[in-house]
Length: 125
Image 1: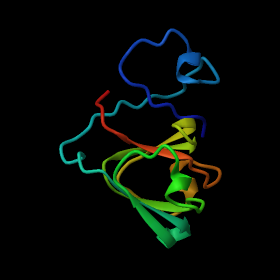
Image 2: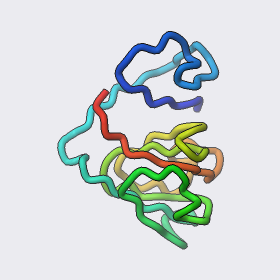
Image 3: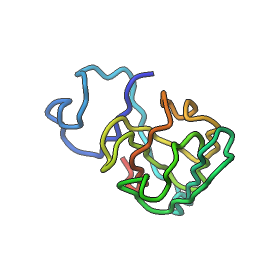
């Protein structure tokens, strides 16, 4: 599956600037924010299939554990585009989530349910 990186418009002299691990890019996706994606809502769950303990997010969160003390096994993006990061303070592997239901953490490309921080995608690339 590889690593995902969310890059804003700008110049990147080398891959270390965006904390990349290689100078090779295999694919690229251009995102454009659509009208109606300005409402950001996200539900995260402790169990698969969007069950178990749940909490909601509408804003960026630098430390998910401060608000939800469970592994995130599934989620539902109800509005906007979101980035999940494996570590706190928007560090580590990144996962882009579009509106929809993610019944298992593997649905968004993670090997486990460790999410340290999350952020709304609010800029057009």
